[in-house]
Each structure stands twice: as structure tokens, then as C-alpha cells.
Length: 112
Image (cartoon, rainbow, N blue to C red; front, top):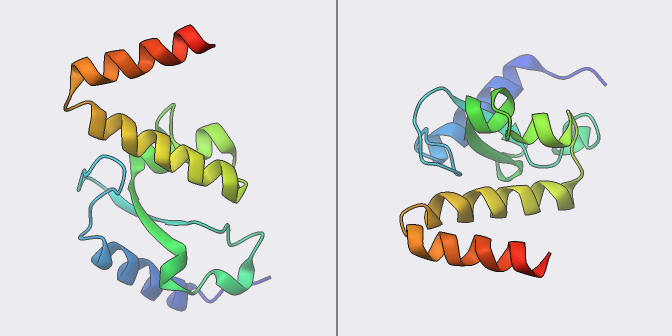
């Protein structure tokens, strides 16, 4: 399916504006990018909806070793995407509380 680039640019701008041009994982405002929650290649009819977008920094979108596209591919499964987002979001929130983060990671390692 061919996409309307102008319309995608409008949606991208609206998503980033809604999210205050900040990554929803780490809060960084460096290079905010629009990510489709439901991949536009798999769900082309959802590509133009603002609710189907989330703002991620380039590190979490496609550049970093733990970025969603590095770990899950170009058109990730929606369930895996949700788990990825929740894990990364919790990791960044817990980083403010190092002792709690150590306890949680220790528990996960022990239960493994």
C-alpha cells in the first residue's frame, strides 16, 4: 500500500506535539520520533490515527541496542511491543530508586 507522506507527516507532528516532544520511555527531548504502535506495514488503515502513535527518542526507536526495532524488528508484534514499552518504562522509573531496582532485578534473577 502506498502511503500519503503529507498526511503521515501531519500525524507524526500531532503525536509528537501531544507527547510534548518527549520520549515516553525516558523523557528525553533529543530527536523525538513518531512510532506506530500498530505497524503501518501490517495495519495500513491505522497509520493515520494519532492514537496509534507514540513519541520515542532515536535511542529507543531504532538506534540503541535496546530500541524497539533493534529487538523486535521493523514490524513488531503488538503484544511484544506493549511488553517492551512497559519494561523500558518501568526500568527508567525504577532508576530513580536504585535499591528497589536492585531488589526487583535480584528477584527476577533468583526466580529464573
